[in-house]
Amino acid sequence: MEIHNNDFKYVIQDTNCVYFGRELTYAEMMDKEDVPFKFKAVINAHIAREIDLNKKMAEHILEISESAFSYRIFQQLKLTVRVCYKVSTKGFGGKIKEKWVHKACSIGQFCKEYRDKTMQSEVMIEDFSISKLALLALSI
Image (cartoon, rainbow, N blue to C red; front, side, top):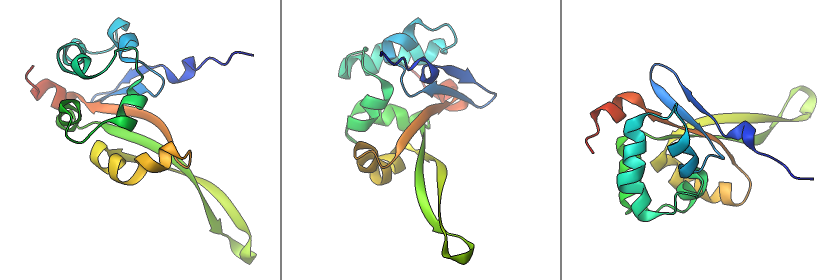
């Protein structure tokens, strides 16, 4: 049975941010009409120099070096990585309950605190977002 991850291949915009599903490749972003043109220009001009555009954004973030130019671009764009993970808590009567924690963090915080846990499957990436204002202010 083949599993399709199309549920995680989306681009959604609100007034402040553009959200990208974790399964999107950069090539798919380039083909989508709802990806801002300026972000496509950033991908084409800078990110494509460092990696193959058939790579998923999630894979790129998991292996990105803090000295890479694309890392600095993502910092400028205020890239946020949303992650989720399970925690066990004691409830009333000492019962142990598991609950999901959802957290949004900057690319710097993700690389420091969650990247290794993601690689060990303790943390799951939900999606990514970039700031529209930061994209507007970025000069290519």
